[in-house]
Image 1 (cartoon, rainbow, N blue to C red):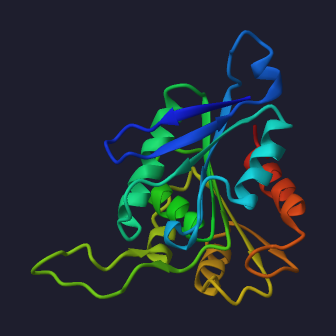
Image 2 (cartoon, rainbow, N blue to C red):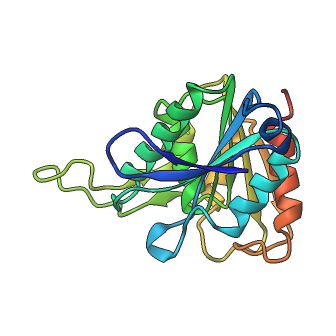
Length: 219
């Protein structure tokens, strides 16, 4: 069962809450856990219907965990999208005991950055995260934040109590995942490599099982 969700925050961001079957059959009560799923780049067709997000959601639902897949509000170079993820987490926190973040590609970077910048999560799983969102240029006179999102820098700021998992394809030639993977290993985070390209063609279910297992490892 799915429900439409209008996220707080005023950015016209909305999502689909995929409710686990056991919860849907229990007088509408939700399970104790929810994973917020961040889609890939919205300017390149990324939406909450992305196949990697739906595969993870299906796997989570099969383990009695709800999943909130959402679409970003108006394009904002990564910063507004990070706000959308944080708002989605806040929505989930009001309804669930445990909340985690998952994202693919652009969404993986958004998830990591949100976890570093105040999103109240227990764990974050990043699939094929690029090292940066947006341009490195900054014009301090007109917009000090125009430099986008430095994902590697944010990775160092994620609180120690948040479990972090980085998942990537060995043949990824789309996203600059190397710096994120390297720092994740240095910090002792979980790092999983797949024999796959950036899009994990034919490996969606395998990847989804690995991500769900990591997110629920200590629950």
